[in-house]
Picture 1 (cartoon, rainbow, N blue to C red):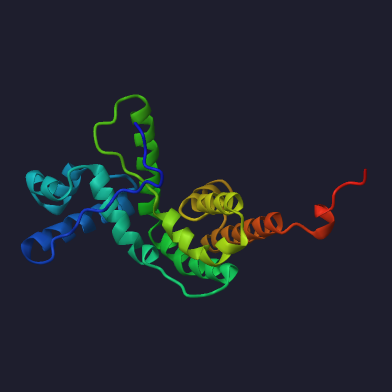
Picture 2: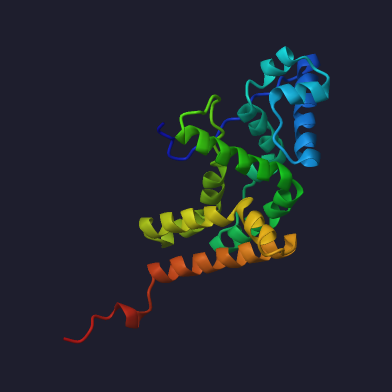
Amino acid sequence: MARPKFPHSPPPQPPERGVKAATFKLLLETAMAIIQDGGHIPSVAETAVRAKVSRATAYRYFKSRSALLTAVIEASLGPVRSHASDLPDGHARLHELFKKTFPRFKEFEPQLRAAALLSLEQWAQERAGLLEEEPFRRGHRVRILEHALEPLAPQLPKAVYDRLHRALSVIYGIEPYVILKDIWGVSDREVERTALWMADAMVDAALREANPPRAARKKPAQ
């Protein structure tokens, strides 16, 4: 199955008011609580039972785990996805992004881990031809980082910019938490500091590649 270049699953649109809006909110909050407390991704049916809503009603709002988890992540990361900056310096804008949004990653770490887990599970099912629901796609960080890197774009050749953009996407999100906490046992604060240190190193490397020292640009003597 071909994937879009920069994939992400659009969240279900919540009703604006009334009983439908209240039911949507109840199901969403129940799913978030199950993930927070139980450590697993609930099915729509399980969420309906916990929320004391009929399964038929629940499926009218969320047709699959993918749709349910997409709404959970949208509720968790809404402020992250809407973050905007007018800082003119690329380094400063990237620092601002990390420092303002990593606390949100910490707050909703169980939900973000659930998103990564579902993505991996469905990847395996898709490869085996066993995926029976629409896949959950994660890709919002592409646009978020693109905004942060906007001041640096004119300073970098496209190939270097693209490499930097992709490299930063590896360390911006739940992945540093999974590696640094699970393997190294570091604190949340150290996860943030290490990720920002790596981001600075990546930006510096990209700028050096785009503007090598004069001695490095000289041709070797014949």
